[in-house]
Length: 278
Image (cartoon, rainbow, N blue to C red; front, side, top):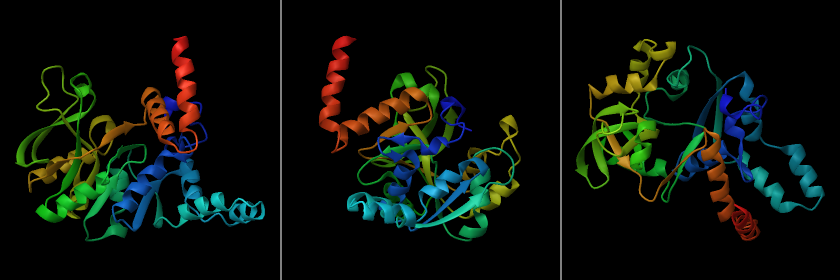
């Protein structure tokens, strides 16, 4: 529901909050496309219709832009609709992050698939998802992206207890959710993107609702881990952006504004003037 960003999210999904001039979810879609994904399933709800509209083909808008001589902007909005083949599903079932995954079962069928959330991302080159797809294809094991977290922030994430496989690749022994100080088994937070086998659907369908009366993806993955090894892939050159809370969202906007070719120079000078007043 995006309650941390109310009232902004009263009528706008949190996934559509802008990072300079693109919504958060477009960064995730572009990462998937850059990783070789052509078919993207978005599981939405009644209050997230604007996500579907954003990736739709904007004939009227394109026509007006072209008539106004704004060809660059017309090409930009046209490109969004052509990023991938989009399929939209309305979520049905209990609350919890396992439900939207299960909702896509009838479309994906008996194939491996990737899972990504729409309100957080890792920026890296090559893309995070490409790195874990490559590991899945090399080892034939379910994979999850992982990033190293500063000591002070370990209590905010699920931290992996791991065994080394090769540089940057680890077998996950268990996940310690939000460990207390001194109890984290490593500094690797395993979350954000997964490549999973279709077997996960069968497990999810049999997984009872858990904490908070919600269906949790992690509960199903824990069951899957009893059947086969799951690998964590430490993302090379990656930085995690948690845009789900105000402070981290604002930090993300500032960082991307400083990289934006249209505004970076003037924005940097503006920040200097602000810093002098602090």
